[in-house]
Image (cartoon, rainbow, N blue to C red; front, side, top):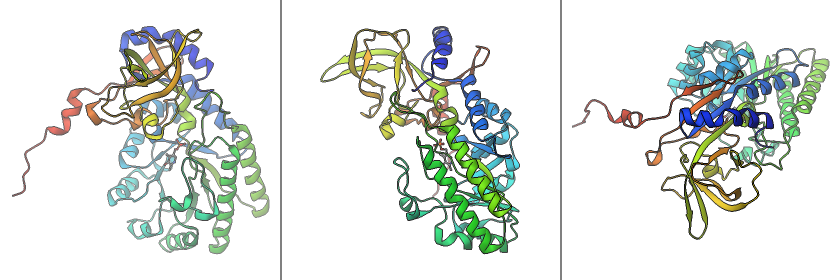
Length: 417
Ligand SMILES: *Cc1c(COP(=O)(O)O)cnc(C)c1O
């Protein structure tokens, strides 16, 4: 199922007054749901001491959400200097942070060094570019033909990320020569993967790689990081990933590794979507109906609020507030106002008959939703709200204004003659 019944109920209770007070469109996030998912994850991996989630900031880069994660003991996975600053703004720093960049710039390296984040290097060629080699260093591993990618992220051979199999031992050898003393290994091969076995295979793959490098170079590893990519069911007929089974099977692998070797790395992951995806919704009002070759329901949000349907043809479930038990349905496209025909939240979807002013609830926008929004056509990004555990609804990011849009057009004259 998309949105949980509990979130649906909590949201329905406050939706009308929230719409009246804040106006549409907005994303709203469910604090209780996020906390429950954090706890479910920790419970699934409780069998190994030191398990740690580094929330992938890019999924929902809002400090109020990140504070919830921090209170759960989570760190943050950052891929850019501003994401590091965002994490530091809520007092996460040092080894609470992973810096997983690719095609890394000198500026990025400097920002990473300033924050003290665990440096996760994407390539062997980047080693000489690290000014002061930190004691703790990690590489992102790309298995190439040794692994089939999942459907969404594609084949590892075609992926720009990570150190190749043939270069991985040399990569660690080179950082050892430069003074590194503590080691981790990372990979990220899946996106929105619903089969837990795939994630277990990734754990197994990293453990064999760690074993290989450890033997070759006579070192041990502090951690493996299996990346993000744990999926959520966007469609009503999809079955959720079995996180309990994933936890158990990963822990079994680590336990056997420890039995065999006398040591074992800690298990880290950096999920984004799984943590917050189902706990957010985009709320938008019906403003127009159009009946030409197809029927269109026009809403007051556009792709600037949610790119996934236009970009990936991704499915987001939609319900009409108060019409959950409607009898009459029609097939429509739900559209925004951009001059771009992919600006649709749903294509040929069967929805209850709507009237102007109806409130649409677009599910599962808690990850890669607001964050992916853009300003094409001068469409401005909407506000973000947080439905607190005690029922209060809090503004956690205001909407963009034309002032924001014009901000980059105010600058000192600068002409090169
Ligand atoms: C995007 C990304 C994640 C998070 O992915 P989800 O699919 O949201 O879990 C984690 N790690 C890295 C390196 C990423 O690029």
